[in-house]
Image (cartoon, rainbow, N blue to C red; front, side, top):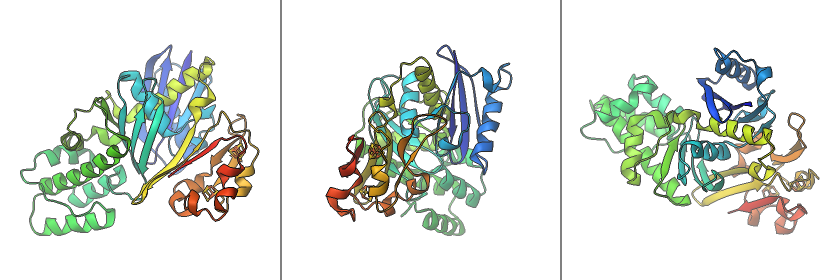
Length: 355
Ligand code: SF4
Ligand code: SF4
């Protein structure tokens, strides 16, 4: 049995193939402007040298930001579920995950099977994401791959008042003009991001066996700062950037063998802001695609789609995902009133709203 997981992230596209439970190959490429082209490119790259073609893959599961645009995937799964399942392959004892990706950070709790039990994410601001670090690297004249090591050269980290992408950039430029070393500036920024990660992790609770996944987990300076704040040694995977794709491949293996259930495919959509954590969870095992949530929601958050010949299910529409905090004011403030909300009209009890 050969399966593949494809993770189309906002900055990087990752793919993992597995044969009989072992990793056969993996690759990491830049995400291009078109997710469909990127998915074929990364699939061809991961198959290079294996003697296999896409037709030889028994089952493909996609994850990541562009997961619904992988034409050859049989199913897709949220990146949150994929990271929890992926890290379980290496470290079944891990219960807390800090996923530091290209455009958001997530703190995830999981059980011994790699199933998500809770999560919070911060996707409303670029501060502390891969995109943010790329911008800072550019301002300071580094490649993004160099900034972690450079931050470790610091002798006196400069405290940053903000990691808001706009203000942190001008603060960094101002420090540069004052003659402060680039290492000290970087150390200060890494410190500020680590504090923010700690606060995110505290919201789900931090267990002793904890890990960091995503591309930023390859930044030694960031790992050192997070370790210092959390006061725990993270259990790092050999390549933390492929954990989402690996998790998707593990889901693919289960689904192909008929072992995985739709219960694993509960899809979480959420955000965190100053007032707390919000998330909408759609349970695919219960959703019967009746469409009542679609007509009930005044903000047009839901749609019912059939992806790649799978049964149709309700999803939070892609264009609504990143604007959830604006579009969905919360159960108590939903313009429909509690009685008319998506949750209230869903007779299958497939929707949970947590505030
Ligand atoms: S109302 Fe419930 S069962 Fe109907 S489509 Fe929405 S989530 Fe699915
Ligand atoms: S609570 Fe209201 S606005 Fe939010 S998703 Fe449900 S129906 Fe839409």
